[in-house]
Image (cartoon, rainbow over all chains, first blue to last red; front, top):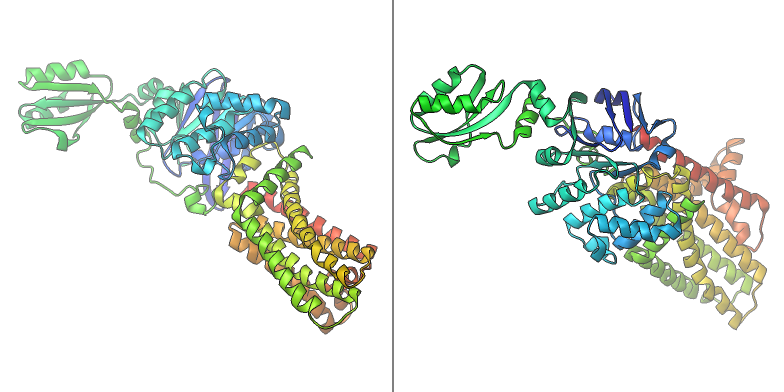
Length: 326
Length: 241
C-alpha cells in the first residue's frame, strides 16, 4: 500500500526527516511512534500530499505522491494534528462537504455521511453545529471527515490528542473498528494507544526510523525487558542480590512515593524475561515479594530506551513552532 | 468546475452564517445611503446623469474597501484555523480552490453592490436616468470590485493572518491607485506604464460616465486573471514549506 524510499525533508538547513525507508502492506494498522519534533507530522504530511519532500520517493498504491498527488489524494483520508473543522457548519453538512470534495457523487453523499456518522457514533450530532461540540466529538468528526469517502488509506495524526482518558478509550475502540476496512497509519504520543491498536510500530527518532516491527519484535531486538518489583525486607540486600543476577542490566528505584515503610518498588532492566529468577533470588535472600510485573507500560520502557539520547526538538511543521496551523 | 462550485457554495454560505458578512453588508448600505443623500442628492441641483456619476464614485470607494475586508478571510482564515489542510489534502486542484474562494467573495460583493440599486432608482422620482448609464456604472463597479477582490485573494494567500492579509491587500490596491499620481510625475515611458496600470482614474471613470470601453473591460479582466494566477502559485508554493 505504502512504499517509502530515501524520503528526506529539509526546512532550511534542518532535516526534519532523513532517508526514511519503510513499507506498509494493505490492511495493516501501523503506529508511528516518536517524540515531539522527531519527524512524525512531516512524514504524514508528505504521505498526505500536503508537503513536498526534498528528495526520495513515496508511493501509495503504486502512485507517486509528488508526481501524481491528485490521484493519491483520492485514495487517502487525512486527519492532521488539528482537526480541519468549519465551526459554523453542522456535522452533517460538513461531512457532506468533505465527501463531495473527495469525489463522492451528490446522490451518494447522504449514504456515505450516514455510514461515517455510524462508524464514529455521531448520528445524534448530525444537525449540531461543530462549534458547539466538545473536544472529544470534534476529534470524532475529524476522523469521520477522513473516512467519509471510504479511502483505502487513513492517515491519522494524533487522533487522541487532548482527549480525557474515557474519550481516549472510546477513540481507541472506534479506531479498532476500522481494522480490515482501511489501511491505517496513526501517530500518537499516547504509547498505550499505539500498543493496543496497531499491528506494527515504526519508531522515528531525529527524522530517522530507528526501529520497526511489532512490540514483541522490538522488545526482542532490543534484548531487554523491564520488570517492576515490590519487595519487603532489607532494601540494600535486595539491590545487591538482584543486581548480581546474570542478565540483569540495571536496578533502579521506581515510584518511591507509593512504597509503604519497609517496602521498596524497583524497576529492573534485564536482557530477557527474568521474572522467575528474580522471585527465586529474592525469596532465597529472605525478602517478601509483594508484587512482580512485566512492566505495565512495556512499550513505554521500550520507547524511552529507543529515544534515549534524543533531545526534544521543535517540529518545524507543528503549529506552535510555525504559527501555522497547517 | 464541480469542486470550484462546491467550495464557492460553502464559502458563500459561510458569509451568511458569519456576523462579519452582515456587518460589512449593513455598513456599506448605511454609509452609501448617507453619502448618496448628503452629497449626490443634497448638494444642490444637478442633472440626473451627474447625480448617478457621483453616486457611482462614492459607491466605488465602498466597493473597494468592502472587497479588501471580504477577501482577507478567504485563505488566511483557513491557514489560521488549520482547515486549509482539508482542501489541500483532497483531490482538488489549487486553481479550483482559488477560483472557488474568489467566486464566493465576488457573489457576496455582487449581492451587496446590487442592493444599492434602489438609490439611483430614487433619482427617477424627480429626474430621468439612462438604463445604459446605470448598466455601465454597475458593470464598472463589479469589475472594479472583482479586481480588488482578486488582489485581496492574493493578499490572503500570501498572509498567515487575516489582519496581515488586509494590510497586504490594502497596500496592493493603494499602489495601483496611486499609479495614476506617479504617471504625472514621471516621464515616458514610465508615465504611460503607470497610467496603464492605474486601477481607478483611467479605467473606472468612463464607466461612471456611462461609457464602456473594451480596453477597460480587458484591463480589469487581465488584472483579475493575473491576481488569481499569482494566488494559485502562492498556494502551490505552500507544499514546499
